Image 1 (cartoon, rainbow, N blue to C red):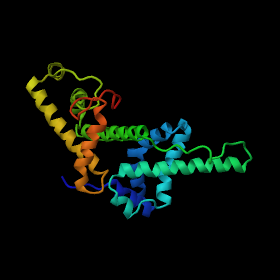
Image 2 (cartoon, one colour; image 1 turned 90 degrees about the vertical axis):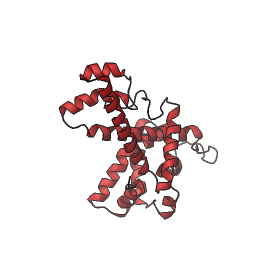
Image 3 (tube, rainbow, N blue to C red; image 1 turned 180 degrees about the vertical axis):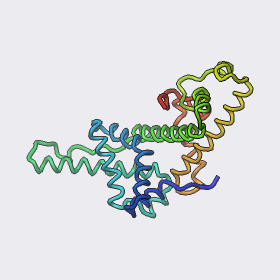
Image 4 (spheres, one colour; image 1 turned 120 degrees about the horizontal axis):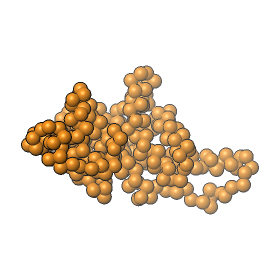
Length: 244
């Protein structure tokens, strides 16, 4: 496959320009990373409303301060860049809020006494799991779009349960009976759909690295992140896209 436009490129366009393509690039970043960013902020102790606001502020911060540069891109993984930048942003927010309290004469505990929580291993792993789920969901939605028409969508409603993320996977016999097809036909279609899903998944991951040689490493990491959820990218993962 050809190496796709990466999120590094999307962020660069959104940072340097204010035209329609740049706004679309920002919209794409928000859609793809909003959930992992917000969840990470909530794990850091913020309430839902504050996490929502801080997620938006963080994305705007990336653009307004031209945080992206050549050095960042050379570090490779967009996911790692985001997590590091967000951790620093939250530390700055912590300092800013305490400075505001001091300015208003509100009783407070000095930041010299209270350490700003650093991102621990559990926080980072949780962020990576959210990232992995977003990657899976994006690939799933791309597969779904390829089933055009009412008849194809009805077929997909059954076949989707053989993809990662299904709540419950039926037997091939049960799926064949529902679709009015032979077991061999269903088995063949499921195989093709799974292969297509893996191609799309690989394309999704490729957009999160800075160069092609990093892709295999990140694909392996994706599998590792999902292992504790019973997923090997061929076995359904419980709960994902249940309402899609």
